[in-house]
Image 1 (cartoon, rainbow, N blue to C red):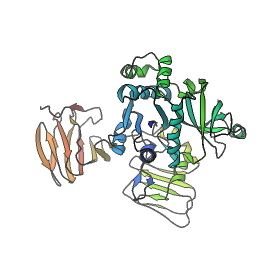
Image 2: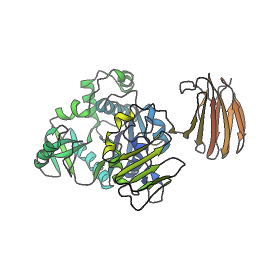
Image 3: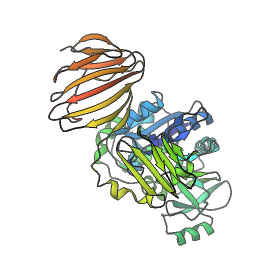
Length: 440
């Protein structure tokens, strides 16, 4: 099975846990059997591997999310990098060209496209495998998943099938309606359009060449920011005549707001949190090192991180976006391919960060023009390279780097540092990268 997972998100609807780097799919909020927590993308990845251990998984995403993907899923997953946001059709066209020209997937093989963050049971991905097999038969150019609706939702578009059979031709599509219109669609046998579909790779590439002037993957990548912003539904699906829908009867949830997310949580409190017996319907997610106590609250979500604190009625939490847009948001936590960092303190001329490196990983070899840095090792063992000179580092060691010097740190075991940045102009753009073989 070839599957493309579409990973986007502006990181606003699940503030303060989400940001432009850590969108909702990267928040570790689902408890696993061994007591650890996993994110939406880790859960979906695990479910795909359970359904098909040999699945070729590619994630279409922006540069801002690559480090989080590598941190959570490792290097096995393929990444189709979008230079900028251009909606779902350009993203799918680019990822299809990536599969064909870079990953070497033959044109007659099926590709399944799915959002990266559906909350579903394992049987959904067994059905997804069957969806790909149906597309390979060639009876239709597109095969969609139609989800049997459980209520008249205003969040989804609707698919009108020609019959009630498990696989049916599609009569028409309907846009996201109001509740009354949704009720009418459902009475006509309509299914939710969850944005999951399959096609033969050659079909999509031919369609992309019809609508976009490009030669191959590299050419499409170079032209990407000039492409029209348009959804796959508008550009392709609603104009395709040979189209089928496969009916899915299981659980499907879009966990796009705090209200819907808490419905899928297995426990009411994550982190250092307590509530008294008079609370009901209260969920707390606390990433701070201070306790949260809730008393006598009902149907409330409380979320705390270094980026802020949210206390909201669950129903009102879906209206968070316009308020978050007004907040001057500095990224206070991020996962990188080599580990993670958390901002501890921000001052006018200093920034203090806790850095965690995974064993065998390192930062880029780099320098800063406008700031000095100090590393204090608080846990683990590793080595530093400063202006080409290597030194071991362990608990209690202090490393000082002046502006302009080239430096990196390499973890032998898991390594934790306190990094203090000092200077009049501290910003993420002040960074020059080098090959590690280069010397000053």
